Image (cartoon, rainbow, N blue to C red; front, side, top):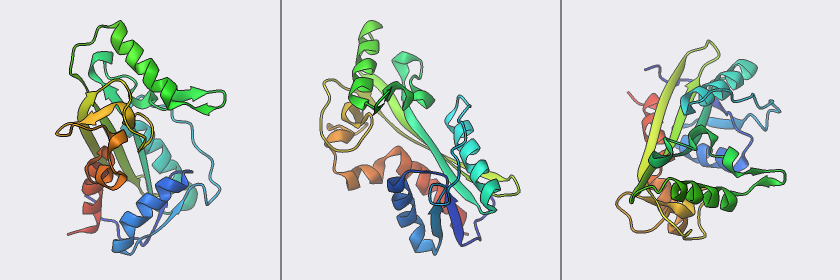
Length: 202
């Protein structure tokens, strides 16, 4: 694995919250993070049908545009009874002309599970793939998962996205009912980040 020796990194996102989360993770290693949004970069079209494919598009685009190493992630939820859907299209299921509506998306998901008479437990997983790319075209990939099951009705006001209908394995509450800091310790993103920080060690 190539180690990250540079002290500045571009996070390929236009989401201020995601930059804040990743900056906090990088701070102990003396890495300064800036975002694609802050640098005024365009958002490349995500044309792949896998998390790793879309994360690579974003990471390589930012690395080539800035000449700096770039970190990107792509994430979503896979539901076994729906053949892995929505997967990379997780956010698309929430799109409306007025922005994203995840209550609508969760309702749609439940209706699809009912339509196929999916047996219980309705298993699935949150997935997060991190890609660290360098301007020379090299990259390293760090996949993370959090397995669990889909529940209904929605439970909890915490989190975002599909959190209120996802109950992680080993817990009797949903991500939507879980304290944000507790969730961040066990989430699919935490799993991917735990692998990612090995680029600083050894």
